[in-house]
Length: 348
Image (cartoon, rainbow, N blue to C red; front, side):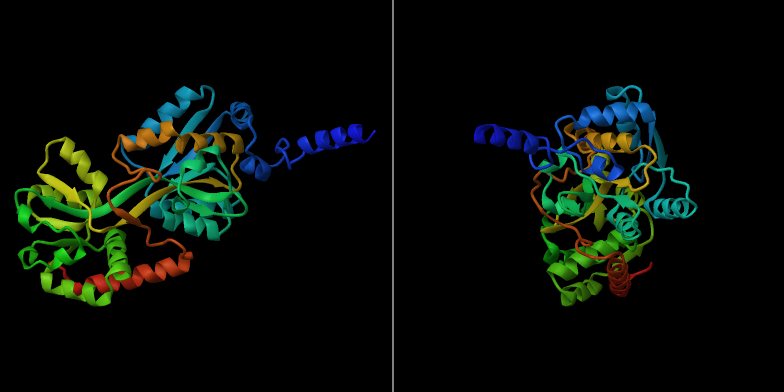
């Protein structure tokens, strides 16, 4: 009799969440579900939903290639993309939420925007079997095993230079080398968020005294975008800059342009995070897509476009300036970094 009782108890436990998750009944349970039939459940639900609406700040071929590959893998699930700059996505999502018009299912954008959406409670914490390969530094934790987002792509800020204008002997290997007199008058610096993040990184690792010494280098400040700054270096109008993205340079190296990129000892990292909206109209499709985006296939598609992969090792230390901050703390820090940057550079 005791044996029968024990067997029955074990059977009951096996069907409970102690031994395995029960079938998800709510959107919250679905987002956290990690059963062996997860993909089957998500795919069946996604086909019934018919589509997913993805908001992203990815540009060029990246989001188009991903959309095409996703639809080929999951026929019957249409991926509709809304592409805009990071600063435009958050206001759009928040205004839609305030109006009770929930359009987006998933979002891929930069941490500053995702932090704001998290603080406004419009993101749905989720889990995924694909997360196990990502380091903790690439995940923004929520409750339990769930996260708000994971870095699905990374862009690394470093020293970009025109190979015809900067001598190899003068190339900097670290932050201290940027103070080399040979580089005086040859450096430019973006006063966009990219330049702010580099200043924040220097303050963290070298201190304010070091940053103030940069004033002696006669640094020219620019207000152009990352690709535009890179193109000015290629054209020879700007010899070099420590605020250039690695992926922007690699694309032009492939085309034969006279530009190269080298990291400093610490590399400020801009990340794109993959998140799910709390009121996603198509929750199954949203999670199915996020699983694909952070899978080997999705990551490979982004890597082919020279984005960094969060779970791969590179020959430099990565630093995420916003890590551990609230939205207000980050905005306040960014403002102070920009003020210091303007003080050490010149506008013409």
